[in-house]
Image (cartoon, rainbow, N blue to C red):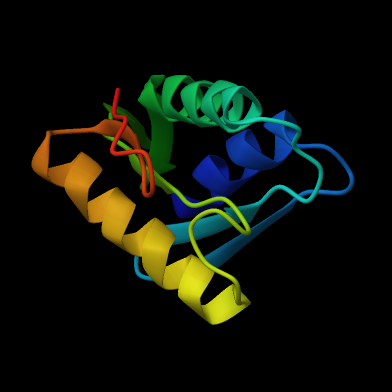
Length: 114
């Protein structure tokens, strides 16, 4: 399921963007070229929508349909942090706030959530 999810996210990104699994079921997406928070909102929404689509998993000759939820934390350089490590911490904090709301995405600095 994680491989399929990674593929879905990769297909949404540009060559200049990066997606990496950071452990468990957590991923980091780095968008190097965004011009506004709206760009990040658009990508987050596409990721959430892509991962909300049911997954068809096959094992032992049978196929099951499985669904997952997704919470996205967004931190923008340099508004939310001035170093890569602090940016990850800011995005992680925003993601946990989104999780507490059930799913969706949340920005770190603005407090804006969806």
